[in-house]
Image (cartoon, rainbow, N blue to C red; front, side):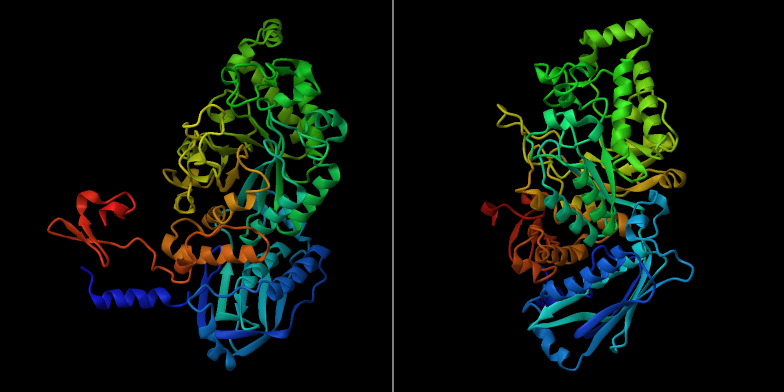
Length: 584
């Protein structure tokens, strides 16, 4: 049984204030224990001539410092700091420096560079004597990341804004160049304001890629000037659309926050809704029973064996590609249903006339549609089936999203493709809510159970990979498929869980879950202060006492497990290490 002295030590340690609460954790960090106040006349200075989005980032930072009003997550909410603040120095200036020879590009320009060309490194130094703090970087994107870290240092008590752990020094950069979040806006529609709020949250945790799954079989909300009938006939309503101006607005908003927008037009599957405007291009549209024609309703996929449909798809993808400045573009490629094509007379006629098999027709379709976007300077991104299930010709530079299960990354890497971790067994946020299909009250969701933040946080991006294969991992992302999500629960289902992969792919794997929890509490509260309805991870009582609510280790004496507050037999221990209520 634990002694009283060891219990007392645990309680004392648990109530000590955290050394810092930065998220993601910088990869190289030194902190002190002094307090530093923020002067009422605090200003951020940058002497270099920089584009407007850098100046806007400075203004936002100054605004966050004044309006976050975040109290420390310790007992007393920082009241114990008031005495130390009486004699604390004040910081009145933060100086930003672009390294000599660095291009003063806009943040947006830097964020939209090819994935492995983005420079997000920065150095932050905050002295404890009141002398100016400084951030140095070789790009405006790096300066933005440094400003983001700087905003997370500050708290408020009794009207005083202060940092609790100066001096602070970090030379920081991401472990992986791709750190993303995918939002499906086709199954349920999300207003532009929801997307912007999500981008704000992503920027706070240094995510740099918004994967926009904008259309699918259920609806086509994207207005494409050359194909207006798709949204006119395929959107849920005339108000549930994204206009070209909306796209420009979202892309600009994201870019200014260091985020590139990867748009996805999933083809040739997941295209049922196109039949509303172009019925001749879709096989088995809304065929029933849907489950023999598609993975989920409604059924319908492009007639890939048709030359006319292939050219239609190529022109469609090219038109969308011209709307987005990113160097990457997702053509999807998942969940093709062969039975749909087997029972489609037009597809069978095309195959017979050309003498091709379905796989050969798919190869022609992929080569044609990918050439259309490659001619516009885009690198294709595909779901893993294009590599693992189909024999199609892909550009060696094609990037693969690994989603069905995490171990498939090994096979993708063995084939020599760069990959992004998007595995359903770690990063799907929609799992665990039960089946959304009608007339199945007791059916589970296919990807159950619920994926906790701890589960994704412990993911190893290079598990079972050789050193050469590990070099093909670009990073990873959380994903939200929205069968059971909409504007009403967007924030709560995403935040703060999605932040776990943001740290995983910025700081690298191997983080301590218990230590991460107290910082994630802090992040969640800061998100709330900024208008994101991030959910609690524990009772507030626990959040104010880091470590006290951890599952306690137990010792066994004569077959009875001993703890500080209860005793029970070994054969009564549950998976979580806690006895059932009726066993206490």
